[in-house]
Image (cartoon, rainbow, N blue to C red; front, side, top):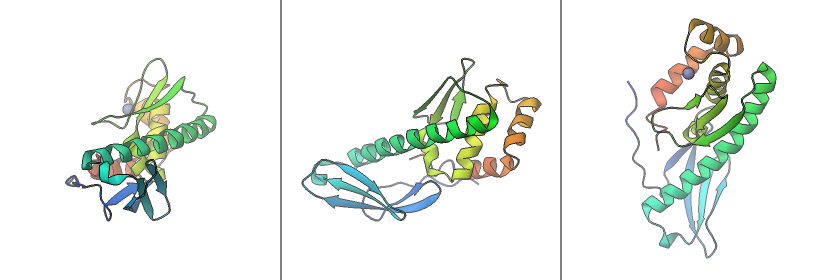
Length: 170
Ligand SMILES: [Zn+2]
């Protein structure tokens, strides 16, 4: 059964996923421009927070996630592209509500930034999935053989995504 989405208030104590581990959100009021800092256990939002509504804090954090996702997914895709010999013409990161990524016939790969909350192994599966679409623009047997050749445990990653996707829809 998929999990029920978590309703967050975007306040101190909220639990946030980043690369598969839970981080505690901290709000820190200070007279500076807004910034977000990540440690192994925490994500801290600092700045003039009294002026920020719940939805503004949510927006700031989603913007931050998107930057982290763009950096991580671009670098990791380049690495896995070199490993597999499958080269996309471009990589972009955007907001999707009901998918994790896509690859068109021009060889352009797009990812949903929300995947940055998932464990690294699951992100690798998504990248391999989209890279194999450069060769097979469908979900044929040949496509899944391509995925399996580069990522043998792909069923585990698919199961993880199925059972966690509502949790990652922040
Ligand atoms: Zn696909």
